[in-house]
Image 1 (tube, protein in one colour):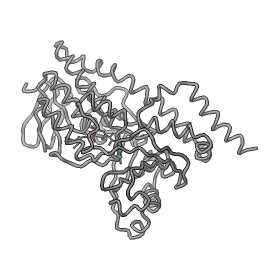
Image 2 (tube, helix red, strand yellow; image 1 turned 180 degrees about the vertical axis):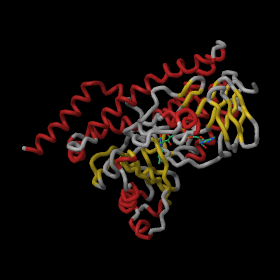
Image 3 (cartoon, protein in one colour; image 1 turned 45 degrees about the horizontal axis):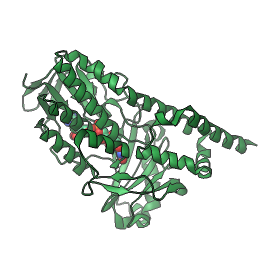
Length: 392
Ligand SMILES: Cc1cc2nc3c(=O)[nH]c(=O)nc-3n(C[C@H](O)[C@H](O)[C@H](O)COP(=O)(O)OP(=O)(O)OC[C@H]3O[C@@H](n4cnc5c(N)ncnc54)[C@H](O)[C@@H]3O)c2cc1C
């Protein structure tokens, strides 16, 4: 075999896996369907949590040429301000074509052999091997599928990349700042919790543009385009009325993760494993973390001469991320429950600590595990109190 490890996909997850494994001395093939730089539909919001993993895995700091630090935050519900903070814990905003290229370059520098652009025509998950359109077949004892929400590797393992009943979907557009009068020159991050069902709208500042989007659980938003239209109209009425805007859409695995992240010696990481926060939609942090875990597990298993140990070693490392996903899904079910949702904005407005807590989660200063049963009880009591006040 020419390689010890094949990594499919060079987004944050695949580049992290390749960086860690090649850095440890494995012969890594890193395959991507695109040559870099390439675009990826994403808000480009990089939390403090992501920053920690970027430093740990890639040695990447929040350099100003790659990130805009946003230190103002406002929280809306259907256009009405319900909370915010200024100054706020920083959220770092990046353009994914430049960001992903930087991570890809680090994986290459660590020694991964890049095969891109490349079209995969077949994946044999048993052997395992990967056949390319140019006729080459690559074999390695371990394969990592880090090829995003529409993962070809997950499709080869399970017949489909995700469960359509659980998946999320996002629509987004990149607007020049002139088009967004209320955000013309500042660095404010905005979240609108009423812009979509079981999801939200976002306006993320970039040096020359504003990334505006809405996203939520796909099944709960049969007309996400109409939600997007309303959100766009609130920020850029003239553009929205002109009909000139073409938004783009993409799936995001909103918390429907795979408990068994792959099969045999084929591991799944990042979006391919469903590792996106079901409340905040944050996927970059867990993509980097899971990719690095998969790369490390592959190295340790191969180093010990037991490639079959890669999967259990990887799964054990994912335990914390899975717990975070489970906790977030429970809170999401509480927040978006039908009787609670109409009370949601007023409750947040009356308790500014809730909006600060949301921001701390978003900024990666808090994990769900830090909330503990006391905080959850308080949340339930506040929402319950609001319900009681409404019915009496
Ligand atoms: C609209 C939207 C907004 C979002 N906003 C944010 C945000 O602000 N902050 C945040 O943290 N997360 C956000 N996310 C989630 C985030 O984009 C993902 O969680 C993250 O990119 C996952 O990284 P990944 O490496 O697993 O997959 P990806 O980034 O999708 O990378 C997959 C890689 O695999 C390659 N690939 C795909 N198919 C093949 C194939 N067949 N063969 C070879 N290569 C292949 C692709 O070219 C790509 O390079 C958003 C998602 C969406 C859809």
